[in-house]
Amino acid sequence: MADSVHVREEGRGTQIGDYWPLISLIAVSALGGLALAAGFDQLTMTNFMHGFMGVFLLIFALLKLFDLEGFKDGFAMYDLLARRVPAYGYVYPFIELALALAFLGFFVPALTYVATLVVFGFGALGVLAALRRGLDMDCPCMGNILSVPLSTVTLTEDLAMVAMALALLWTL
Image (cartoon, rainbow, N blue to C red; front, side, top):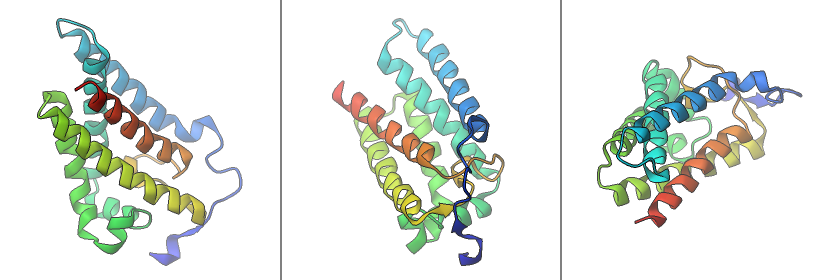
């Protein structure tokens, strides 16, 4: 694992094209969330966020499940828990899948929001630590199918999930 870690190349992750897979995923998730929310009697921010977060996490979980072993290895390079407990890398995509289905099904919202806060808040700490170390790698957050550098965008993703979960928790 240590052989594949190196200092960030100058300019890597600075072009918008480096993030096209992520931009596409966010746009499709937003459209899916909007379509799901529009199917309810009222188009509300809560319904939209449930749809967006559900679709987003569903796609992310699926990308990781395509190559579970590869995801686990990459995840262990920056996630604080996966570095100490490698089995967490196998479990994490299923946690995302469970959260996705909970958001889409409005299953025990308070528990779903708190779990999202914990999972993504803790994940953000690992990304922040990796960025501070200058770790240069493709982010396994999109599985090994799509190549997007681990960067402040990854950190922003985690923090956006935390912010949305907080906003939803506030609505209870």
